[in-house]
Length: 385
Length: 125
Image (cartoon, one colour):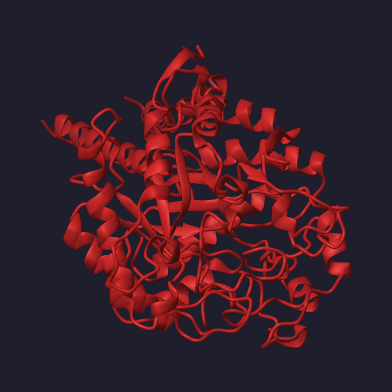
């Protein structure tokens, strides 16, 4: 073999592997349809008017399910459930919610929050109380696991209900805000987290503890959590609320949080977006004081842009899913901005779909590669080919 | 943000509801990336200073270099000035999730070396 032939052979050997690497990329570009998102990826917050005493959640959850919602996140209100110290726990409201969700095959992510007066620390007017003693909160959390966990009494008492045990529990909400927690929050919040973690895992060793969702500079707030010795041992999933004006910045937000986790050696844990959305409050003074509000058409455009971004980055971000904020709001002139976050507006007890709703439905069904949902959230009556 | 309505059904003895209804005030939420797009909402928000909270964040003069936007003190909000100071911090890139081309190069180099060695050995024999 001549030198020239040898050079050609060497060049071919070097170039061929590069072509082999490039080929799948071209193939991907030719097939734009991504794989369906895993079950539970699309979630919805249930709050505001949906927590009214008289509301019948059955038709609401039926519509949610047909929209493509596979999981719901809501508050489990300790203050309402156990108003007397050491007294029995009233599961009436949580039973109704868990049952309505299970009937449609939707999982529930509870946010355990609100302290009864008998364990409430002194707090400023217009803010929530923190617990004086964390043990009763932990005991309530364990009681919830015994009610709705894998061996939960709710399932044995309701044999006709589809068994969908709750395996993830979120401890509180946005403790970085004065409204939710006395500041500085990190040390005292982690103390509650540790107590709840121990109690919940004692009741269900397979249960996962979801950190409270952080908005704003979540990656910096997460750093303060990591700065508390041993804090990382007390949660399994990091939760964030990426409220930001641009949909692309939601992904940037997640990346910064991932960077923070990496810096603290916590890369294996998944992320969960427990709130995301935009408020159509622009022009509804005095609601015009929120960083990420927009118009009704802006809400449509941003939601439409965000959904495929979240799905496209779910693997690289180890993103378990997202919970849209929110299903229904209560819009009126001068209302707080978040009252305009819903896909529906509550008008005298009737939920009216906003222009963003059909876009949201179309977007999430596209993520699930489903044209029409079946009777339960984990079924699809008509698949997208 | 989790809104509570319907207090009749959710008697909450220890909770004093925030004015306007059971939630952190809108003014507490800030866009960590600031008014980067000049969109309507942000422009409006920047023009309307948010209500002050007990502790203010770092002034613009102490804004950090490019990178992830700086933290405010926990439980506080950024002032419009501080939010504006975070503009332009777009230096981060998303993680690479594709195939690692270095493996192919290594494989190629290994094949070349193997071929050359085989050729040398055959020529000697």
